[in-house]
Length: 549
Image (cartoon, rainbow, N blue to C red; front, top):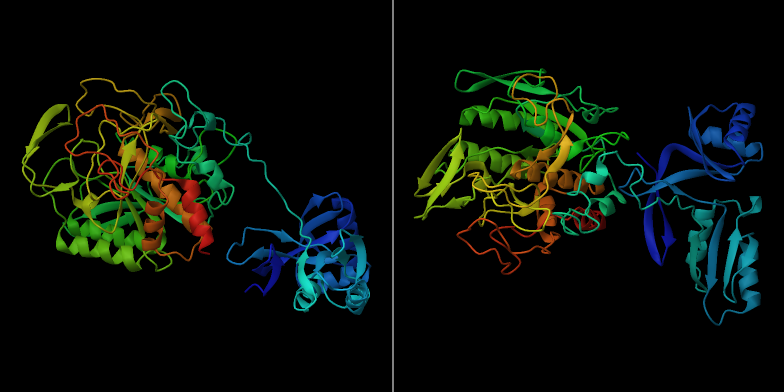
């Protein structure tokens, strides 16, 4: 358990925690840090420069004894901290802090207080403000000294002079195909591309790119785990291949690799969690863990309930890019209740499993029990039709996040299903489900299978495709954003995640569609029958989650 304390910054009291083994040393180089540690008999690892006179390192064994030994040799040492609830944040302090006195305090009173704390003045910034540092005689570290002085009636503030490790707001070090991944960042207009059609992920990444402690499950038809973008240290949180047994049981092994005809799982996984490795594509939440679950797309209610029950304690978010076309297929009460329970109290944290579900690609309602219209759709090369009540099964469940699709032009994807059950939309490609014409819009660049048999590739001979899409792609996009939200604040419940995703969604969309829709798409009271509460906004969602931490 990290030791908790606090500091003042910007007039706010910020709770912080000591890192268990990380420290800083004032020293000019990594080499001098190793020499000092060796002389003091302290074993250190992961030594890295922070600035030209500050080095961060990890102390092996007893940290405090190691720090004492180095201090006894005359080295300035400090603990490394993080802001509470954000263990990946590194907050580095120095010997100095700002001390501002209130107006009306005399110079004699100021000097008396500085002297009483046995501080050294580094610089007098203005009449009332000093940059001071602790000395050996102070007898306490700069945090404790500043916090004590902050309580003095004559002091306006006492705030540490912390080190800021700033990051560049560019993407020059992201994977080579990232510039083509418009759904992640669309900074300007281009052919078939409109500025702002993306999910605004680069700003979200300034807060978090995900965390290995957050597990994203993609349940689908097979996964190429030899793919470089689905590899990484501690990337896999497991692998589950579901095999049916009778009409109620399932058997499980680890062989999730694609079989001939399994073309879908790998690109879905890449959209959500493809690793940053300076090559290929990148996912929405590249630093999250990945749980691939391969299953036959033919399971009974009981087998599906068991599969979700199996996934629940192993994952934080699950992406489901499958379902029913136009049909009257309500969920069985048992499966409905299983999903209801898992969404409320399941998941690895017991706060609910976030379940993201594709709205479907057949340009029809998700649920309309009074439907009198006829909807045509393409299946196995044949044009079929459905009239009468429509209930699209899992996509209509009120506790899931149901996802429709927008385009690179910020319009409705011509195929995207619609209805009151939608939560949000996410950018994807554009096509006509009935193949009557070719609407405008770019495809999604993501991972592709290679070498797994006939029907397993989008683009033969390549490990990446630029032709992925449908609500199949929109759904893992939203699942990735949900994973970033939980990475920023793992204390959130699944219901809170769903609310954040909806409340922060962007309504900067054009109410345009290249196919006829039997409901208007305008936003009324913040909701659109085409887009739900809007296009998922990664930056807004992650910032909102972090603010609640």
